[in-house]
Length: 490
Image (tube, rainbow, N blue to C red; front, side):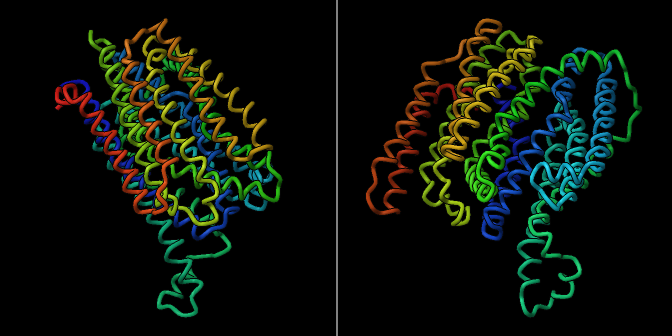
C-alpha cells in the first residue's frame, strides 16, 4: 500500500474513537456550561490541567520506548512486560501517596474541602497510565480496530454517565414530582455537583482497565532489568520533554487560579477552559494524527523514500489544519453558542489557540527527527525552551491581561519551538519540506480569516454565507494546486 495512503487509513481508524469522543465531549461543553457556574467549571478546568501533567509523569516516555525497542529487540513480549511492570509499580505507589496526603494536597491546589477529588483522580491517572502500555502495544501491532473499540466504549461510558447524572438526575431531583423521584434520590446527591463529572471519568477508566485485561493478564511476565535501564535512558529525556510539553499545554490553567485575584480566579479559569474547548477540533486532529504517525514514522524509517514521505505528510498536514482553522473561525458566530452565555466573553482566545495548536502540530511532525536518530535529549531541550517561554509570559501577562495573556503565551511558545526545531532538524536529519507551498497555504488561510473579520454586512446570515464561500474557495484552491498529488494517493 502507498505509505501515505496507509497512514491516512491508520489515522482514520485510530481517529474514529478520538474524533467521536472529542466531538461528543465537545457537545458536553454546553451541558456543563449551561448547568454549572463559571467558578464551578473552573474547578473542572483546573483539575484536568493537573491530570494531563501527572499522566505524562506516570507514563514517563514508556509508550515511545515500547515502539523503539520493539523494533530493535527480538523478544517483543519481553519489551512489553518490562514496560508494563514498570508503569504498574509506579502507578500503585502514586495511588498510595496521593491517598495518604489527600487532605493537604486538596488544600494546596485550591480544592478545599474535597480530598475525595484527589483520591478519585489518583485512581484515574494511575489507571490511565497503566492502560497506556497495552494501548501502545495495540498500536505497535497495528490492531487499530481493537484499539478503537476499547476507546469508543470508554468514551461512551464517560459521556453516558455525565448525561445520566447531569441531564437526567439533576432535573428530576429538582422537580416537585416525577415517576423517577425515588430512584434518583437514592443515587444522586446534589452536593456532589461537578464531582459527578469526575465520578463518570473514574468509572469509565475502570471499565477500560477491565476491557484491556486480556492484554494485561494473559501472558508470561518477564522483567528484564538491563533492558529496562536502556529503555529508561531512552525514555527519560522524553519524560522531561513531556513534562515541559504539559507545562506549555496546561500550566496556564493552573497559573490562572494563583495569579488572578482570589475572588475571580476560578471563574476566569472556567471561562478560559470553556473557550479553549471551542478550539478542540484542531486538537482532535493533531492527537488523532499523532496516534497513527509515531509508529508509522518508525516503521517507514528504513525506506529509501522516507524523507520525501515525511515532507509530503507535512504539507498535507498544514493544508488540513488550515481548513480546520478557517472552518472554525468562519462559523464562530454560531459555534460560540456551544458555551453558556456567561462564558462567551472569552471567545477572543479561540483564533489564537487554533493557530497555536497548528504550530504545535507542525512541531510534532518535525519531532520525528530526534526520535529516529535517538537524540531524544533535543526533544527535552526544545520543550524546556518552550516551557521557559510559557512560564515567563504567563507570569508577566496573566496579572495584566488575564487569560488573553495565556492564549498569546501559548501561541508564542509553540511558534518558537517550531522554528528552532526546524533549524535543528535541518542540521541533524534534513527533510526537504515544500516551504513555499506550506507558507502559501498558511498565509492564504490567515488572509481569508482577516477578510472575514473586517468585512461585515450587518446580517448574521449573510456574513455566515460569505464566510463559508471564502472557506470553500480555499478548499478549491488547495485542490487545484494539489490534485495531481491527491490522485496518486487514491
